[in-house]
Image (cartoon, rainbow, N blue to C red; front, side, top):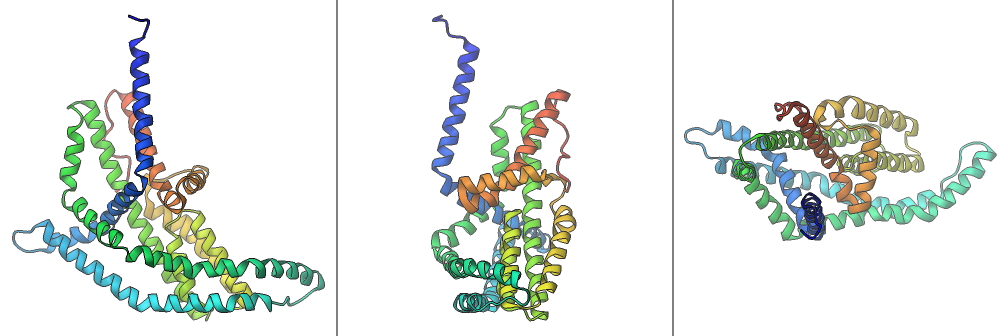
Length: 348
């Protein structure tokens, strides 16, 4: 009737719904990002909750384990903040105050050609370094301002609490949206893979970040590199931004070290050696097979995510690409075999 093909109409309607859904997601992207942070925070403290839950005597309740885990996490944050935070703020303030003058007085050691090159570099760095370095304390103050907002400080842990407390119930409700059969089995496998992926990803990020901060801080302290704690914190935090973050941290460390003239060769060798170990040994081992992505795809995802949503997009690019990879592999296996493949896409 009316010359309308039912199959074409159905596909058009489906495409329209997908476009509408993407548009709604874009509109609520800020709220969605808060929920994603809460979910990742839940994955971050989940091992501690499970450990406490196993050791509680008698009739254990997960709520009690959650409460004890929150107390431990808050105490650790307060302790680390009081021990390291004040030192970082002090070094950032000192760097902002002294770095431009240090760059302006920077002189080459040898050679007239080098002198000409260095003069031009010095003029450019002196022009831009003040704004670059002055942004470090400002970014720190912005971070503290956001953290001081009760919407984030209170809401994210509360949302994470419900994610941890009702995770099995949420999973069951998602499965109930699909009728029994191959599609539900496929959805169950995808949820299992996603759970393992996010758990591995958050564990790997935290361990890599802590390892970078520890290694940098210890080495810079031993070598008496100026602003060693600040540079260590910067390197640790930027580990959360794939590829671009470590590169930015390394260049910043080298810039500060070269201008200050403090053990430049040793710092270059250490940073390069540590990046080789981190990128080719520690990171693949911690991430596991579920987060394996081609470097070109990874770079594309990081830059595309940064262009779409700034730092948040760059941070979420790797898990999003890994989730797409999981969906593709599961759907492909299900179509080839006629039924969903067993849960094995992500190594435990």
